[in-house]
Length: 300
Image 1 (cartoon, helix red, strand yellow):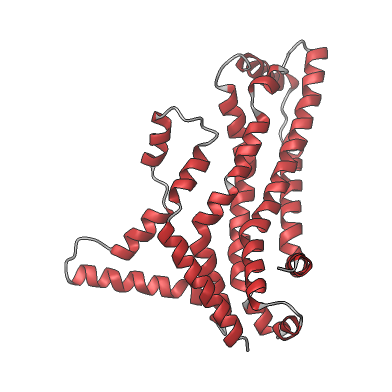
Image 2 (image 1 turned 60 degrees about the vertical axis):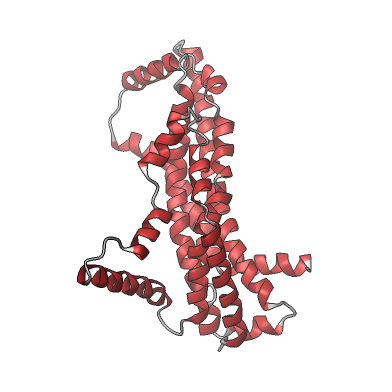
């Protein structure tokens, strides 16, 4: 594989979707960083109120639950970025192959010495890993900014108010929680791989309204199955139950790890790892081959 062609294709995708890949995470990060200051301006909160909170945090530094509090703080900051990244991924996968056919730019890109297999593979890589990684970088940047604020607050409180927050750094496991948040990226992408492959297939197939083509077949299958189940008085809805089992995270799955005294930090990684299915990956691989075939034979 030509490394230069591979990296150039990645840069091309980032350039074409620069607005959603770059500006959305930047704007989201700025909003999160500015939110505490906006809250202070809009609410008349006295210094005594904040000092009381910091004193409670200083008392918590001696407890074993401080690591869980830190994990919750980082999770709250990461969650909006993860959700927004998921929405942007849906848009990217639906549009990545459809747009190049609609504006006929595919004729230009196919004139270059780049194979269709590489083009499709790069789009999958960018959407499944690089795009969410950019959002995670933005989330990590927000966490680091807040950590700097906490360092400044720790210095001011220790010197001016005799309130020590320094044990927060020793017992909070901040770095470990950040690493754990990043470690969930790969199992999450493997779990969602069939969805990515289906959206790319629809993007390569649809001549109009790719979003409707992606959603309507699933809705129609669910409605037809529901009709047959009701009409013939069947016991189960196979397709609906399969989708629910694959994408739903049950409370029982979380309780299993809790009963095993598994660290709360690694529970998201373990849950998503257990959701990965070989059958689903093979289905996704079949859809990716279909996407590759569609790009070769149905480009116009």
